[in-house]
Image (cartoon, rainbow, N blue to C red; front, side, top):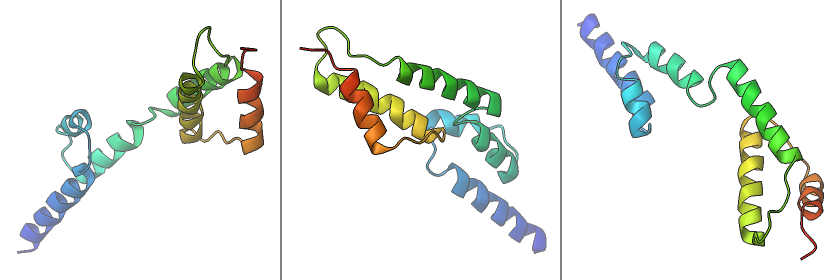
Length: 112
């Protein structure tokens, strides 16, 4: 009876961990034998290893610093690009003050 309960608990843990995964993530966890393996895989999947996360953060910071309005770009498209960069940086732990973001966006606008 104890073994049967343990199997149920393992299945329940795997179901909880895989419930809201995307199609690709779900099939990526298919080869995992238990909940612990799934958990370890999911820890690394979103941002990769520490080195990958650090490299991604560095790339995004460079992109943020070099951010400029493109020729014939609308304010709406500029805001979308800017928000994408800033949101990714937030996700990697880089924080900005609101006034810092406002000044950055004002400085990157063209005269037109």
